[in-house]
Image (tube, rainbow, N blue to C red):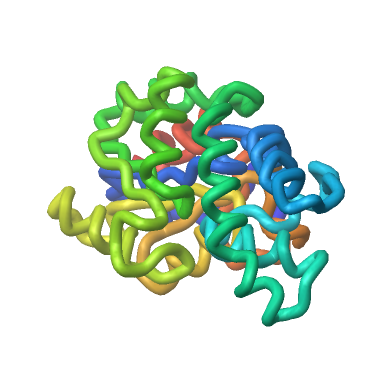
Length: 234
């Protein structure tokens, strides 16, 4: 599917949107880069590149740190160093959270347009909630969201459908009335399992794979374009 194309009628009746954070609203790889290399320095490991880290982001902090450690250690070594590495990563990340990350184009305009159209908004991210809430506030995005769930807010995280289904329950809306918007297969798989329509953006991370190969209902160039597509079908 090409960018700018959305399946006919799939957004009809949509009353709310669930929006991902990392890679969808914000380019946070520069934050990850600083925090991870701070942690690696404490373990006497060489720094790694932002491009390497970009391929690892999106499946939660535990997966991220284990993947980073696996560059240098076997499975036993990863588990041996995991607790220390996670502690160091969290300290470094909280110290710089949001200082190096940047908004993608038309994010705030898109959120404002969705709110103006009467959509209810939730942010669902695999980022720990202690990282997600201050980041949204720092970037002045918190004002748009009624609900924010992090990767540790519920027993399961994306690609499990639980966080999306919880938002549907919170909003008292059928999944068909709640569109998920994200940058990766995690978002699309969670939406498909929850029976929510799903839009994807062509930038972001997606674990090194092309978003064009991901099963979604449309690729939108920006969140503002997403808002327009939702309005056009309603």
